[in-house]
Length: 477
Image (tube, rainbow, N blue to C red; front, top):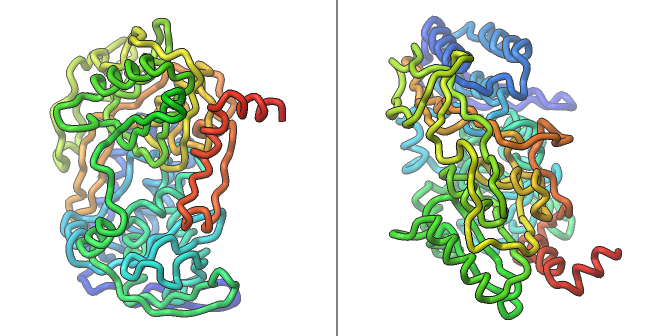
């Protein structure tokens, strides 16, 4: 079966679908209905950013297209944009376990690390051939498909929470997601790319794909990942503290996040730090409690963090197709008929922690700041406790749907759909962008030249604002 894309100007590009026997129509229809019922019954935020009427139309429109047998990937291309229309970054339709395993081991994927800047897609890193002439160039097409059409499909397939506008850039740059999406849309190795060099000249090249093990091995040699989830350093003889949090998990073995924070704030107190820069860029989330714990060192009175954590029910019919971990402790049914996680560490009145930091706080964020990062950023913003630098955060201001997760495997296509069963409502209000993330006070735009040179404009600005004289000058300007 062929995939045909009609492009502007009458150009038609056709790709041969991957071999594989199509799944019968009635089985696809049953999978789709199982998926729909599961989302409608269990996902507490399904209508948070998309109305029920709009979701019903989206479900119905896709269902009518199930009129012929499809392969796993064809069905995924139909169903994933439906799931993405919920606009929940924790709810995403994945491929079968078999195909996911092949992505991790043997399928050759796109060998270039890319960055989306505005509406233009650039080569950030040629993983197979570092420092090649491709780096810094703008990608114009891949296997004959213009990048603007590739980006259109990517935006339909992958979302974060709400209507945030920066998440797409972070998702495209995240690990191998761009390559996986190309493969899912039948754009495969060898890759014939056309690109515009830094000097404006158009070129073409053919590239062999890279398997994930080869990609990871090359990346580890060229740019090894930090071995801690969080670290603290000081500038200006300790007067400026820089706290980098890459994930909201324990920073090191045998060191809890709370212990790390206690030692960090004690060191700030000892150094007489007057400014704290908190770097949450590309932090996708993690555990819930650490975000609340960090805020507790920055606020000097009792506070509420989560207003409510709601679960529609303790059991659902789709559980017979799902892997379901034990429910969290402290689920209590209340008068509204739904269940509330009253024993969650972020439930109820929270107390400040010592040593308290009363100095200026600068938060660095971008489209990769998600989940727990966004909860923490919303609290900072609501309480006017920080200056925000960079890009809009990727999560909704008022909360998300995540937590206790049932992993549904559709019985015929074997597509996998993790469904978060807990809908979080943050103790914030009055935000003028209710369907967006935290907005920066100081937006920062990057160029591909900045990225290639390793220039960090966000951090440069934060440091300049944190230095008293420069902060005063910036305020006067």
